[in-house]
Length: 217
Image (cartoon, rainbow, N blue to C red; front, side):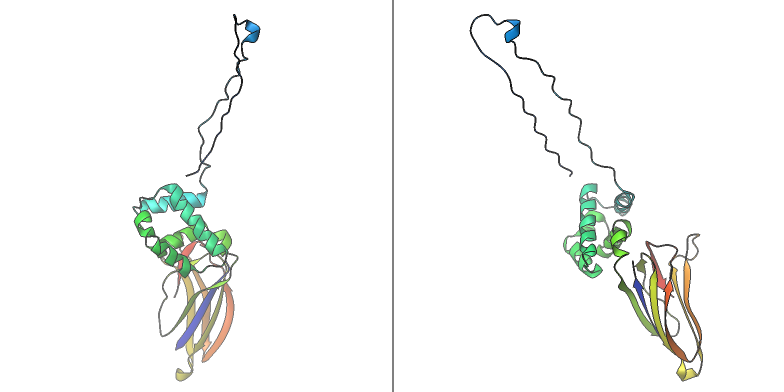
């Protein structure tokens, strides 16, 4: 039996402060109280503070620290948002992975370029990527097999074709599932269970764990 499946997913801070003062006088003779320049209290200046991190930014920083990265939080977050801008404007994942690899992101993040980009996409870019339909995976083969992991951010459209005519009738079964099926948060979504000589169909799958890696099984 031979099958082909395609899944399409929809899916440091600087502050410049200027303090200027004016006033004063000079003259001869004995100064009087009325000639003394008025004393104006200086404004109290607080220490500039960075805005709090978003949940996605915090998750990215935590992931980098967990991987042993030494890059500063502001720098890592800045690179992450730059990647999101490229993805928002239609740049491919392959392009940003190449960009990250050339920038030696592994040294500062402790991650491979691919893993860093996917961590950024999961934490910072979901609101952009969920709007851009794109092919996440194209897979074909004979017999039983599964695909490499791929990041899922929302609803999937799955198109599959199978041909069992050489054996008369066959059972074509397809699922999209998270990697660790022993976990309480695992997800397994069936998209095909066909018993026939062959066919083709397009269907929709609604993953319950968006933002995580799935695989075709």
